[in-house]
Image (cartoon, rainbow, N blue to C red):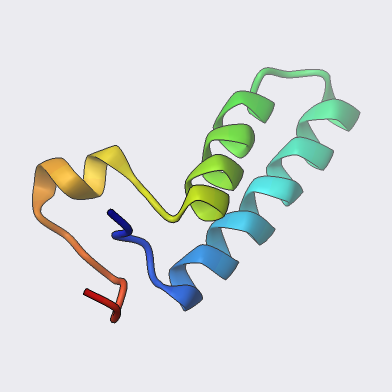
Length: 60
């Protein structure tokens, strides 16, 4: 079941990619959060959204 909408998905993927690029160049572990953001954007599902009852996806 999808709970991540199109705009939310785009923001997650772009922000995740930016975190990964920054993390690799800075040598820290923020790439883990970046990878999680990209995964939630690609699969259109966020477990935290489900727990909180949030749904930004317009398709039911």
